[in-house]
Length: 185
Image 1 (cartoon, rainbow, N blue to C red):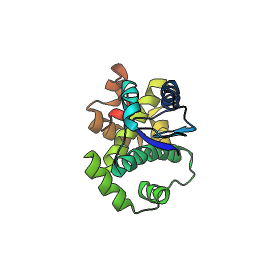
Image 2: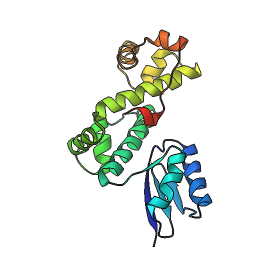
Image 3: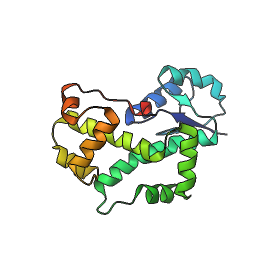
Image 4: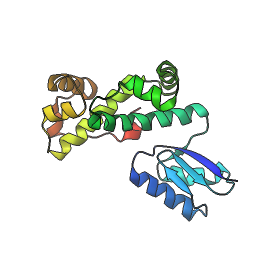
């Protein structure tokens, strides 16, 4: 009998490595670890592993709604890559409805009820964090960043950046401050 764990705050490949390490060191080597999910080949009481994961900044998700919200957050991060690489990207609603096989309205209501923030506002925050990341590299112009994230113009990006951060892009460059992805909500 296997145990499936749904884990909050996994946002990058290092998170996957950390969860693999934590589970292995606890005597429960996983057969699979992906963003937000781990499978252990033995029965496991989640209470045994929860404190160890929490010490690393993760949290076990218990309810189906919490699990779906975590999956939505991961899907929205993947959507940013879709925006960058797709020749004709899907709309957010089409992308999520296709990925989850359910209506966007249902996903949006669940997300808002569970998180207290709309999917759209969360996606905007996620995009602004991606803008901050790209600005920190210093390799792309604001126009290039706007194109990559499919803003209608660099002015639209600048306006949204100021609205979300309270700073202009220029002000941000002199005092950079990034928010961890698990801190967006």
